[in-house]
Image (tube, rainbow, N blue to C red):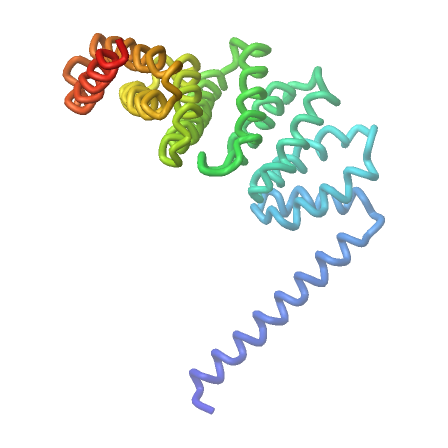
Length: 269
């Protein structure tokens, strides 16, 4: 064997032995009943940023040290290990439990914030179910109400803005979806509710435009005894749109719909 290849082969073998030995030592520590040594090992792994090992050891220690002088440290570092491992759902629960169990701890405020932060991190894309987004908003709002002077307030408010925008985008796409599937009455109702809920939305112009389009389709396909009232509502919505977005890129189309409404109303009268 070439000397260089032989040296490399020896290095690989020694590395493998080292890894196996390390794993063996960790497994022994995990199964050990020497809890002080286990705590020291958990802190060592944590400080070395070996989050997975630290997490498992702290989880193991939490059951043994409950109610002891070490329980607060273990609960805190267990939560931090979960957070560093990006187990956000579990970390949120751990930090929330910490804040309730140790309300007078100097870490209680940070725990309350980190619980909300983990919920924020667990929030999915706006295209998916937004249950966890709403939970994150509720927890961040609760935090800002409880700790108005916290140094975390600017960060919490930034997260709230981001999450609220996510919900707004979700609600807008749902409302537009009704129009795209030709559910015109549902589109008008959903978009009207959207504008009431988000009056400053950047989608306001498109929402008002789509209300006019959907309203006209709904009106023109209505029974004759309902058509007049519904066409008049489209005219009213056009007036609001024109007053708000006089130079809109949608104005030509809206004007066209308005003229058709007026023509239909003249026939009905």
